Image (cartoon, rainbow, N blue to C red; front, side):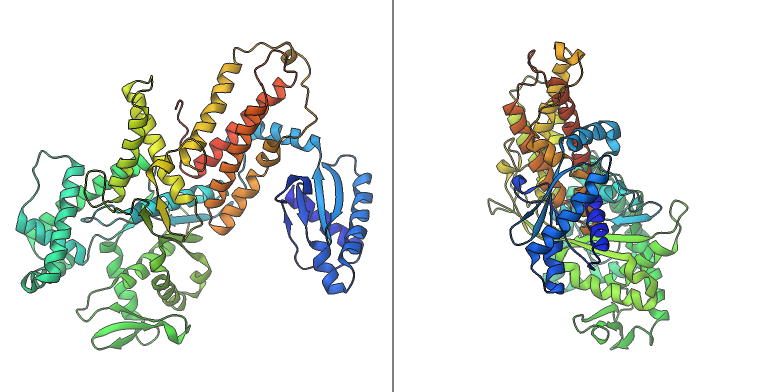
Length: 578
């Protein structure tokens, strides 16, 4: 409808011989001001040197003439407001048809074809073997998974990718500590073993900073990990890599993510190093035994970074370069990549700009095909950065704590133990994902356990609970007997707040893709849930004397379908009961 109104405005301006480059068509904040509003008259009036209100009245008069000539229109009225805004009021028939359209499209409701035929890779999460799965990985996963689904909803073939640092100083620190302090007990679980490795990494890191002898040994281990020259180190490395990767997979399963492609630093480092060496004198320069890139020569906002250090080892920058060129050069699922989207913490934004500038000089056609999305930091409302068990908080422990809090709340409910665990998992994940996706990307997050699991607004569980309430109404309706349901469907004259929001879903999805902004969907769904709860409170739907029951039940179905599709885009499941 938004596009139809835009086209109507353009056609009218052409007939009036008025030229315009761009104008806005938006939803007014107050529904009394129409369903859509445009500033086109004010934009044109400024250039033409005429009164904007008078021009708006002239445009409206012409549009109404054209609409009267049409056999069918969903625009009931057009009016001039304020200094020259033009407001559009949609007809009752439009809103009825939108409900029917939602029921017809079902899981396809809200989809678009803007990326049809395109292959888009979204790289996210990126935990490093031998290190804990921290809060940043949790944030990256929620954001990356949501962007993957939004891109998929826009018609693209989506490839979910995970890039992991399986070589480097952090690996050497963990291996040093494993060799010094011993391996974990064999009978322990994968999760326990991975946690033990993470703890030893922390010990190795501390020794690297405080013990000069340990530092020398760790640097030597780092070199041997790269060239695979020490059998004992190789065995420890292979074991630790396998354990931590398996532990990560358990977390991905809980979060609802399944990756299509894994990249590792050990694979892309030599590729990147070769590319850097081949471009010395063209893009890169030698400096004090290292190889650097002076990015500020090409953009004064950028800075110099080292790509190969004085020990002839590739840095993160070189690995990133090798990764990006590997992504675009190889065919994945029988088609080359069109776009690569990477999610990282906001503090890596400047680093990524330097790397992308270097890549654009080596391969200019990739510059417009690389997208970088950043997220902020998370801290707890309590100010404590430790888990409920007193350990330093990780993404994994925060996730478990969230599920544990929900489990405590449903412990007395009349559910089986298995159902309680499933609810705790679903609601706990929803609480975290919503909290991460609710702010605009790049914003820091203050996470509050109690608020995040509230069933009373502005939370993931609130959205789930509202959807479950709608599902319950539809379940009860199966046994509902009402004589009006056997007659022709009656439509109430009043257009509800719910109807005025629900049809906007495809527009929200489209904008969320254009701006890489999952928060637009969380905001929309929260407003939609509030509108549904008001609708539910003001209408006795399953009343034997309710002559609008048929239409209202269709509206409940349309609401549930929209919530289901919208929550899927956020990576959130709707439980059967709560």
